[in-house]
Image 1 (cartoon, helix red, strand yellow):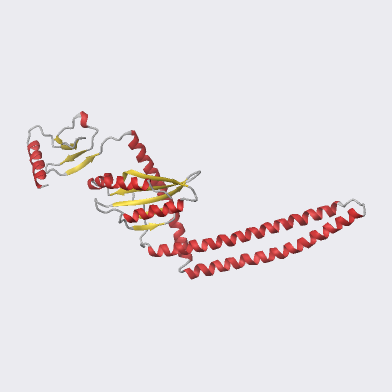
Image 2: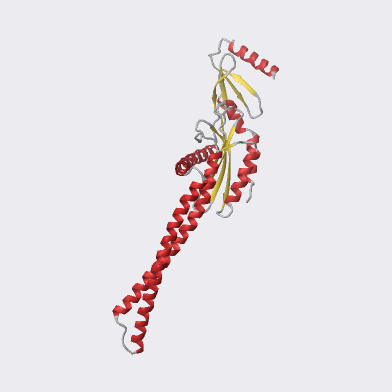
Length: 316
């Protein structure tokens, strides 16, 4: 390492001491790993990534390599994903804020849910009484119609209208009762969901999470398709895969998981995102690094490529 540094410093000293040196020095690496230095970049090398060095050999600017159409398309896909992540996060943060303002404990959730259930039960009881009354009226009108038929007389239009009206009201009441019972089921499901979310929020760091736009994306992006019946299992497996890497999850919801934001060049942030499509759902794994020379190298390393490959092989 010391020999390489000394060699590069010597090369830089020789180049910068040349009379033709214009004050800039570029460094690039070809496909064979050969390192080149020059005050001018040959046209055939202009599409490669290159660094601009100062007179001390320190990198001051990194010019990225020209991107292929496939790479451009991949970056657009990643940018679109980040926009969706931002919207998901904003929506969930608003819901979380409302939850925390409404409840301070599981007991609060139980109490409010019970009051709502009691109210629904009261509506059901009233509607059942109305249904019994309507049922008796319907039977009475039907008996009157039967008497007219037995006597060989035409059933009056008023009697037929009464039967139709009572039947319609009775059916409407039965539908109301079914709706009230469904509301009770949904309230109980929401009770469980709110309790889980409240406990999750208490366990997560207090600081407000962000997607961290100041980072740069890895060129590797994982994507899995799943159905409504398989997505939950796949989501749990993807979450386990993240934790197996040693990454610390700092934010978790049912649609977005974020690990600790990168601070050093060697750091990376892993994000899981669940997005509903027209027919199915997709789970994405993306990686972001610090916006620096070292961060770019981290985002492109084989470790990330292997992680994405492993993610793409997950099955429910």
